[in-house]
Length: 302
Image 1 (tube, rainbow, N blue to C red):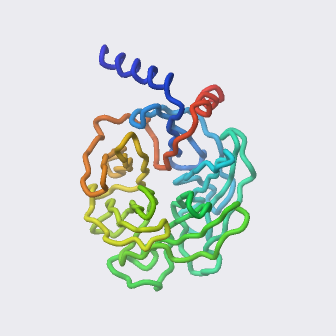
Image 2 (cartoon, rainbow, N blue to C red):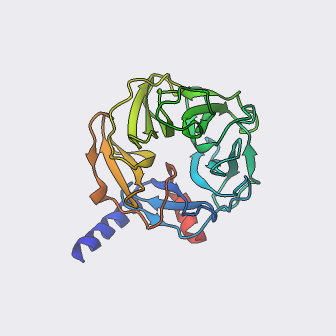
Image 3 (cartoon, rainbow, N blue to C red):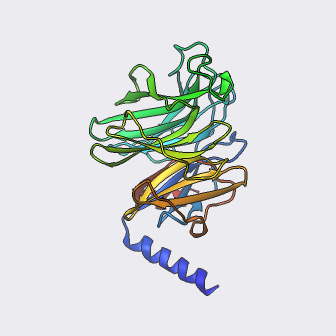
């Protein structure tokens, strides 16, 4: 009891003197209720706001999986998500100024030009501060487009991308990452200028684990794919920086739990799962840092 009181006291003291905190986009299975949000004052201990903020209304299945969000320079929050397991040629998009009131939802048909596209999974937003544009990457399968490898033709994913400055006009869809195997759930991380890391899931049946690759620009090319730093049946990496260390959260889905590792160089990794707390039912999204008043307003609204 005393230990938990000390943890609570330290979190309260931390929140009272800091200017920013963390938000973690989330969803609960079966993903038909909509956007959930977690918040944290230290990047390790998370609290659920215990409500949905945006119910999914578009796509064949009308679900909201893998919600990814960034905040633009003008304060607007931009959100993208998976709308269906199969059948959709795009992903969902909406924006908000306060995370409570949202724009109309739009299906962005980024793979409409590829009629045989099986799916559009886990769109991930990244703001490129040097080019002043947003990069959106996602995984899709186009049967017979790439060497079959060990995967069936309808499960042989590669990563694609588009860019935008205003979420109204988008660059033509292009191939983003082809490591020679089925890949999904990729996240771009900027360490510094000309130094980027791609955290990804090797989705082949023998692997199904997380790896990293390295590049000099946010659009790659990403090379030198690492050995796995997680065991099998892990997915959905979410990356944030706490102090001088990077935290990578991920879904250990076979064991039905959430885990995390820390690293300073993306070459050596330390398990910190015993030191995190994640609300039950949380499924993977993205983590972003926001100003503290945003968290306070969300708590009042929940």
